[in-house]
Amino acid sequence: MSPAGAPQGRGAGAAAGINALEGYLLWQAETSRAAERARRFTDTLPWLTTAQREEVERAYAEDHLGHAEAALRAFAERCEQLRSEYRAVYRRLRRRLVAGYALVAGVLAAVGALVTTVR
Image (tube, one colour):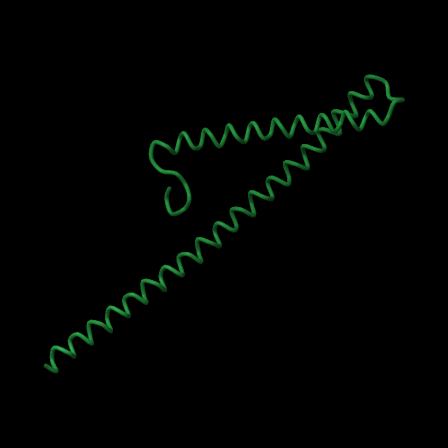
């Protein structure tokens, strides 16, 4: 993995394919859940005709999937925001650490030079 969290090399295509397949399967499961919830909802409305029942189920499932998609998009956007924030924090910490090491190395070099000149 690269520091950014993305796979590199030949495995990148396989990882992307697996991620796409996982996303597809998760969305299919969500679609099935939406259809099942729609069926349960229309079961509480026994006076509907078959055509009305199908239309209500379609609209209910479509509405459910719309909300699910919006929630997933918001979640993905927040993940990207957090990733950017964490990257920025990591870069600042890394710069501080390198500066600290450089300072310690400079101090040790100065002390070493001072010790050799005193002898």
